[in-house]
Image (cartoon, rainbow, N blue to C red; front, side):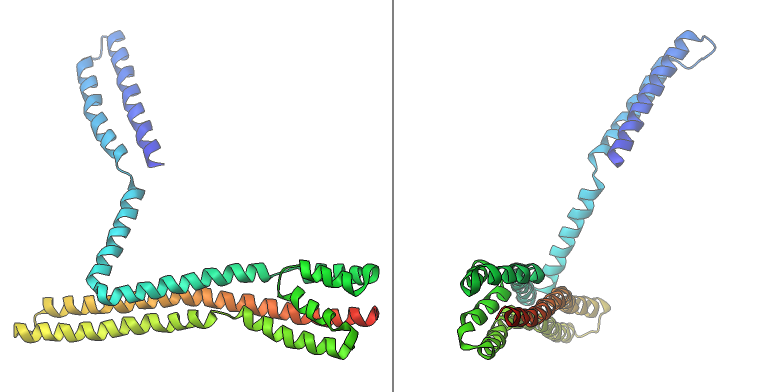
Length: 269
């Protein structure tokens, strides 16, 4: 947007200069020569061109990049790198869980309607084939129940409850690792801060004087590890809570669907 404004400004200067030149040639009352107008436009053009080459967005992004890089180096690679690794690994598990949970989410009402139609038109084998071809934990639970249909509804109910617990455990896989990285990131940051403070006091002892520069510099470097550790933990905590909410929603939907599933079997017995 700023480039467009500057371009229009340059165009305005040129248009204004040309108009003034023509007006000066036609109107003899104007004493200012054409060369002065051309010179003013020539002086303004390089300044505007220099402004065109400056991109404030690039400057901001470049400044942020170098600021983060500088703070990372100041904090010390020995302590900042483990915090960064925790963040990367935590986000990797988060992405894996998001994909898995999205694939596990199904329209339970639609599946139940198809299942009821399959039971009415093709019997148990048709219903089992439908569940076998449908992805997701809910269809797997239904299949285990239908596989024990000949043993009675009580066996079906036990199979649904047992295998439902297995599927719920699969939904929570790798969540403990995300929780570990949430706790580990600030812990590593605090550890780096404590060691950095010890090093700062060592510098004071070697200098033999409590210089504000030595104290402030050492404390700033020491606290950077804590800042990065807390930021890493907060990012992972947000995703962790989102995943928990997603899992709770899937589990509740599975419980409601299994009740409807048993009702359908009773009606079509």
